Image (cartoon, rainbow, N blue to C red; front, side):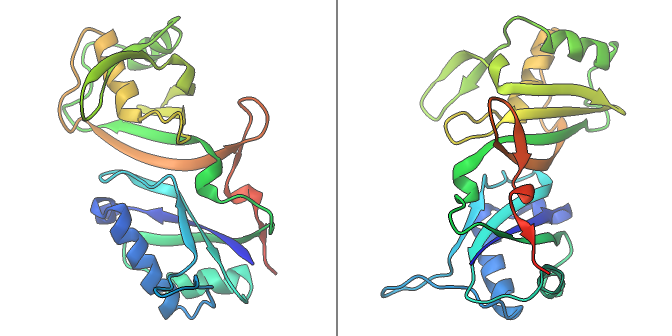
Length: 232
């Protein structure tokens, strides 16, 4: 049976990397008494995978992991069991059954939502941020410098920005997040600073990922959570 777990990663837990997060959940699942399936072979491991691992320094209320289990109790009971094992900053939000032929979350991620705020004293000054950000997103193209390990090049990121707005002094973005087309929110905001004639200061942003989506039709999205069903 395939299960999709949604969880939040907040506070100081944002400094914990993906591999440590995976190890943490492996232990939590054992302690919660979940009847998880193991791979076969000389070194069996829990059947577990994560969707779009979160970068270090980002918080999230929309993280996902898929597991396979032999048996299970209700969604409510399993959420309660897991949350009994969580430390401060980690919280399981939902536990849902996905179809047996359902694809792994990591293979279907297409987009993600982010809420971005400026740290005190780091916000762009002397402008109407909402008006300028709308002007920025309405540009025919958005050219930024994308750095790789070996080089840097100019790219147009316009097509990877599905939605964007300013809500209560925070910037909302829905961005492309597939393995083949992944756009970091930092790059979008860095481009905005360039657009207004400035340079983004170091450690200027606080970023929270709030949801992850699969694609249903062209640029029509459904959350990974909604692809599963509650277990009564």
